[in-house]
Length: 216
Ligand SMILES: Cc1cc2nc3c(=O)[nH]c(=O)nc-3n(C[C@H](O)[C@H](O)[C@H](O)COP(=O)(O)O)c2cc1C
Image (cartoon, rainbow, N blue to C red; front, side):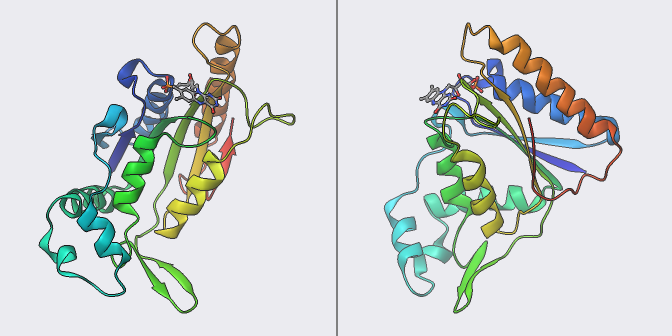
């Protein structure tokens, strides 16, 4: 089993989302101790935004020479898509930034959600091109967003479901640690709540393939 671990926080390994994703990986490794981990760091501007020739190629109605030349963003796009294709499980560690994904994760999405490569456009809509596999998303946020009376909007969860679904990744499970702004009293309680949710989820012995589910 190969786990692709994508980390998006500018705070790297001290980040809450990284910590939560490590817990998820720990649970996955209990199920398969031989699982191999492939690490893709995209936080802190580790991957650039797409370039002009990539945007022009994707905007063209038909395949353009830039799509086969594999230079610039096209080359990075190919590398990132292959990492996804090669994985059996994907774990994404991400903070919430301004109610949605950080711009670094959006930059990764712009490289992997690529027309004529990971999805195609037909007269009846977009058709996904990747094989489905379990995706676990570890989200950290300064305030809560998923309880009965949320303190803010959540564009992160619906957006990730929609955009990953476009390329065929529909089996997405979200775990979140909410209310963990630095110095917040809520942080300890939030981490404990998330630990319990993880324990419940992975100790149930349920298959990894669960379809979209949100576990706080
Ligand atoms: C640019 C920026 C925007 C943020 N926007 C939000 C937000 O919209 N909602 C929220 O709850 N927290 C927001 N936060 C707080 C982070 O989500 C929170 O501190 C989180 O725990 C950071 O996770 P990390 O340690 O994995 O980076 C923001 C933080 C930054 C730096």
